[in-house]
Length: 337
Image (cartoon, rainbow, N blue to C red; front, side, top):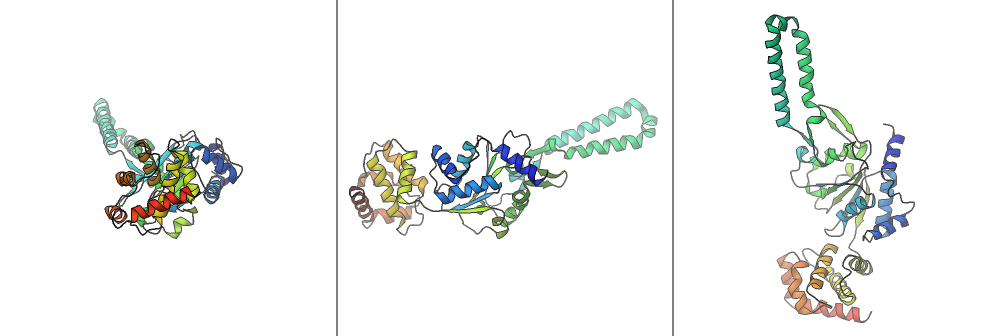
């Protein structure tokens, strides 16, 4: 397929959401409760227009995975997610052969051959032996046909049967090893995967690819060159407030402001794992479920498990007066506007 026809197919596949500007992307994301700054919206806009993979890095909980989910909703298409982990390999990420089905097929071939021999007799089998062998070899080659493949997420994303190009999320790529990362280069460059027994499997509708990384290890330059890149920072106070009001609208305005201010102050302290936006939302949701209308020391103590995920961080906050110090600062800041 030519580059022009590929781009036409990709454009047609994303026709349900075809932004004309970065502002269109910002508005569309907001309509699906995702608050994006202009830099991220620009990266998404260019990824859609240029049909290039988008590599997102940032601390855990800042909304990287949610970008892919929101794009799938905007494009009204399927989200195919590959969760990476140490030791991930081809059989779990790309494809494997259905060995049980292949074995049954081979046994059926053997049974058919025995029936043919019995029906024609030895003389008939000898006279037509070369033709039968050729037919048998051809049928054996069929064992390595597409119908015997078990498609895993990467190959599934290239499937031509999709009515719309799917969104392929390769989540937490930094958890995988360098060998698997190298395997992705063909997919990211040409939207194809080569299966030795069959040949290249190329997408007729290239997927929208979003790759995320928490940067526990560096991603190789070869992969970065194939992608558009954006680092998602922790949000500003104003942006995080807008996010929590969108995602937890049932929370009181006072509580939402105090929670966001408290979390912003907390991130300035030296914790093992600073809370991300996901933790802010969980914490505000927990406080709201308990009927809290504003932050109190008791409420913070009771719900810390929704905010901090390491015992060392919990102890650092609760011992030595740091909790009261941050709580007073947050309440004073909100009271002063």
